[in-house]
Image 1: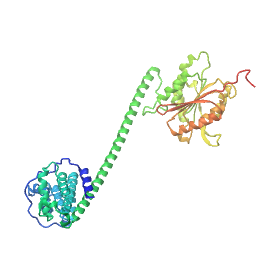
Image 2: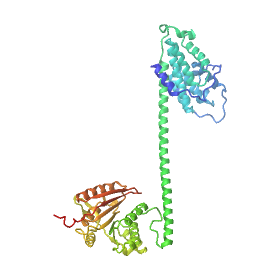
Image 3: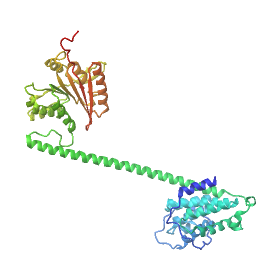
Image 4: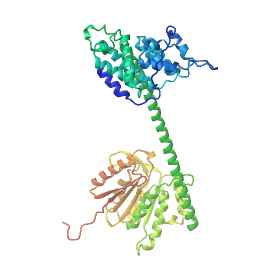
Length: 495
């Protein structure tokens, strides 16, 4: 067990050089007064005026530690140390001497004093680990185990004073320890039979190990606290950087939008359609481009929008530009619904300023409870009679399967309830049962919209309609469901 503990300690602390390790000298410390009581070891600040101290005290104490002169180290007292500039290191060496001379309670007080005075944690761990090796070497010597004893004494020196002249110090340390143990035969005594050895006393070793364990646990707790503090600080910095980056990006977007608004105003005379105080397009620019792309590439006859806003102006402008390319076809019918008067008036003002108010059937439709086939109730636009009139205009629901329509679902807002936009598809399928329908849903990045699409797929399948689904990766994502029209059977093929 002792050998395993020694190996673990040596692997833990390694043999890296430490600036605190001194070169060996050959002086000794004179005897001092008896040990101080526990009440005398409380830390007190150095006096304001300089106090004389022994300039050679640290060198003597280092040499005594290297030779293993524990009794001399154990006589170092607080009164002698407190005014010394190296008092922290001296208190640590005083604790080491007390540990080796079975004065554990005093040793703990001096260890605390060394910590209070600022001894480095690395040096503290080195001296305590070296003390364990020394105690293990003394135990091995008493047991007559020459190789083990020499190895532990050597490890004690290597750990406590790495880089020192180990072989020279080993002879002095070994001789001193054997003399303290009463093995007057010197190193030759290490070959004697263990049966003739004095009784083995492990109390100092146990005390030393307990002290080292306590110190390591305390250091671990301090390290854990420091790591937690650093982790908290990293989180704080990350949040700060995220916030700063978000603000910078938002400001850049706002400036770009404002610049584009200025260019557009001087080119066309139209006011910008964005809030100049912040980046606040009701629809993202990438969604607007995708919307224009769909309108340009598909020959729609009817466009219905649930939730008016800037998207209404975008669609109206796109249709106005395409009007000359319709080649004699009727103009595209465009209807848009909004449930709040404030946004209805804003959209109307934008259309009026752009000269496009007459091209859109903009309707104020307050929310009204709508009961779904599964008996759930949803607050939705009061638009059923309007949809019925549109369907009648285009020969729906039983004729004119060539109708192509685009349905833009961008309202009502999610704050009105769960699956707030779900009624759009069932209502359109009800009134336009044979048409080709492109359902375009904005904000597909949200979980609520994804669940709505799943429910739509079930409704479309139940209506025995075929469809394709496309997910478009945009700022807020979008989903396009294209429902194929139901073509009438060819003449002569009916039963």
